[in-house]
Length: 344
Ligand SMILES: [Zn+2]
Ligand SMILES: [Zn+2]
Image 1: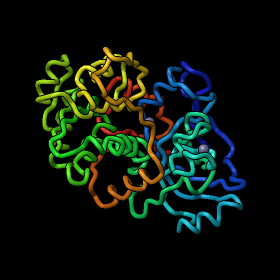
Image 2: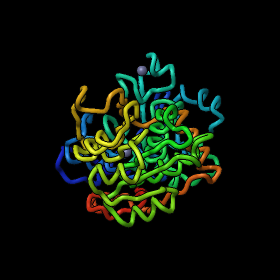
Image 3: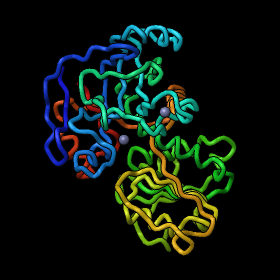
């Protein structure tokens, strides 16, 4: 089968021919319908992403069809009411299945968690192996090419909003930094927060005018083209109860720390590698800082449910798998408005 692999950081992506993987034990083979191209893929290619094992087939945002199953996968699949040929999206946090985090359903947090496209082969390929059926979420009638971005661009903002629930009360001020694919899902998911969604005041900070227009269409109250913290505070009307940083660079993080309220929450999502100092004079008193990586399986199920009910809009541009390198170049150059999905 065809696959797109990275052999070493800084090297070009290579289109190679690999043997079709055969599932053993509890493994499931998913025939890939599409794999989303994420900024994190660029960080992996650049060698700035931690916790990566090369060489690897990239692709952590994957949906497709159940294609073949190992002998121990049949029974759990039946319990999940999934069958050969069903369309599924792959949850990417593969934990040990036995520790406290895994048993709580938060496998993405497991200390020995592995993820496709990072430490094991992912979905930039015609097929991929998933270690257990529990990592699959059925798509029912959703088109798997369109649904691929839900596996990361959809679920990660949902997770960050779930973690911000305590702060998301009517009248809360929210700053969203970066309005790419994740930010665009975040804007819509914020409006779906029970009892407060319609009453949140949401400011978006973004470098691209086109994306700011998109932000307005998706429900942002104010869009800011970059600018100093003073400008952001003026737009918010007061300090931010919640800042969602989907970029995560040195400059966006220090901007976030400068505008978050005392007792407010700063959620770091983007993996651009920025850091900020933490201490009494470094961040507002009693403010809260957290990172978010993926979401739980249940979070992904919820996002798939919202999508299935037509509550989420997102743009997908299908590109042939063999053009992965060109897709990376375009993402790097900021020439992608929605999500590129590589189709084998
Ligand atoms: Zn990603
Ligand atoms: Zn575990």
